[in-house]
Length: 118
Image (cartoon, rainbow, N blue to C red; front, top):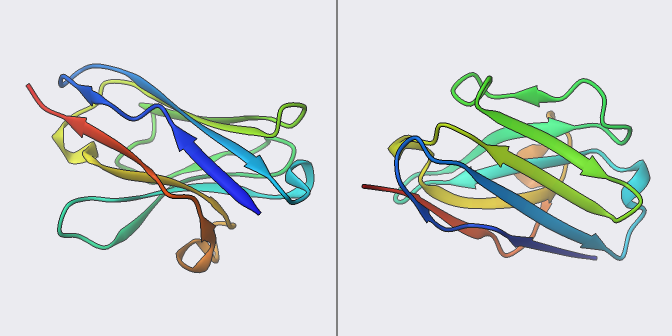
């Protein structure tokens, strides 16, 4: 099993980023996937979950309306489009094999750093 996140960067407040996660070694097309993040000095935090068909995405309240989770099952890719970023979004972002219920214990990749700063 391998999850490789890319797309993190330094971005100004109000900016946008698109994170990608390349998945391999498991049946991606039948697996619910989740994005989680960890801000400096804080614990792991659930961000968003998408089911295997890409239906009914779920978001934490603080990112709803700004972030969009999506997937391409043909390419085994998971995405997180992040718009109108602010300092509270600064974190290492991980994609995870997990549902909304078990996100804290899900298998994660190595993460990608997102820093929002002027």
